[in-house]
Length: 296
Image 1: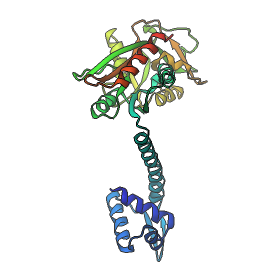
Image 2 (image 1 turned 135 degrees about the vertical axis):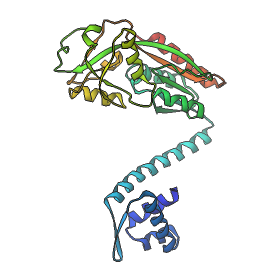
Image 3 (image 1 turned 180 degrees about the horizontal axis):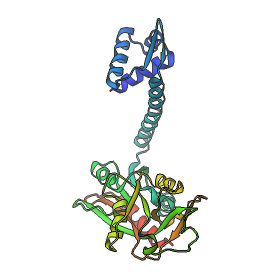
Image 4 (image 1 turned 90 degrees about the vertical axis):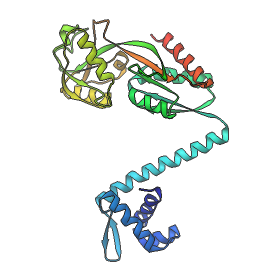
């Protein structure tokens, strides 16, 4: 599938006429029709209904048009940003992060970066810790903030914080009125684990915490996103463990209970390529250390 085919499809969908679309695109109608047929064959769906001399989008065509228009708009933004970086002479600095750091550490660090005047165009990408490893090696990001340490010879890592874990339960749960809970209280509960993939992940960290105390986690459901896991908890489908900063999330249908288990923590781990000589990376690493030191 080529961008040219998608652009042709969008034009035909907007005009609902091969004749008008070919005039607008400045190409002959037969090659345009061929491109649309090839696109339909590649997708394995019919995008247009041919009604005599008129056409209209099928339901699949409407969906494809909506989504490709969103992609095109995003691509246009990327093109504009790329030109802006080239014209300004600024460097681009990519940061990968897991969503759970955005309840405390992440926003504080990013504010410090803006206040310090880091001389770079900052790109933020939400991704799991394992995805950060691939992105670091591919040069897609310059630094990652995750929940597990990356065991790789080419990656430098530093644990910035150890956040206590808290138990998230439905508002009607038997433990919802408790000020705190112990391992004995939570060991036999049914859990919603996240992320389900890719592994290893924070889910394996949670499983490991129980196994170190000779307990096995009973998994009711797995989710790929923390927000989804908390939603499943709200629905009464299980409980889950989340970093304590997530308690800042205001929900009426979920209660967060601190644990009387000092070992039940989750690290925030900073990772970067060992051979990177970027001065911006050194500046961001220093700011991250300062942010962690000042964390409550």
